[in-house]
Amino acid sequence: MRLFESFIFGVLGQGIRALIGIKKQLEEANKSGKNFENWFNLKLLLVSLILGGIAGIIGLMLLNVLNLEVSKLIIMGAGYTGADFIEGVLKSQVKKLVE
Figure 1: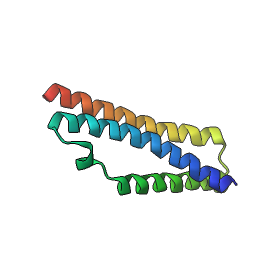
Figure 2: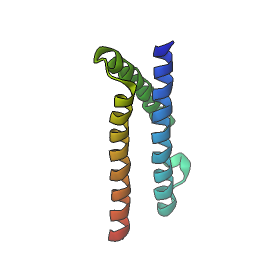
Figure 3: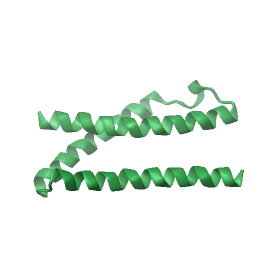
């Protein structure tokens, strides 16, 4: 059961990340006049979600193999997602300044 749960939580985490990406793409598409069907790729989203699930399983394996505490793995994940978020915000702000 832990394997399945890890997969689902990985999918959920990647789903949140994908929603943020979709929001950004939607904003850019609106600016350029593209409609949703022109840029949205369901197959790519599904592959992304599956990869998130696999990452969740890898996280479980790290917990077991490296004997990490859950809190340490959460901090590692927060570091990754936080850096990704900050990078995205900085890129969007730079684009606004350049425009």
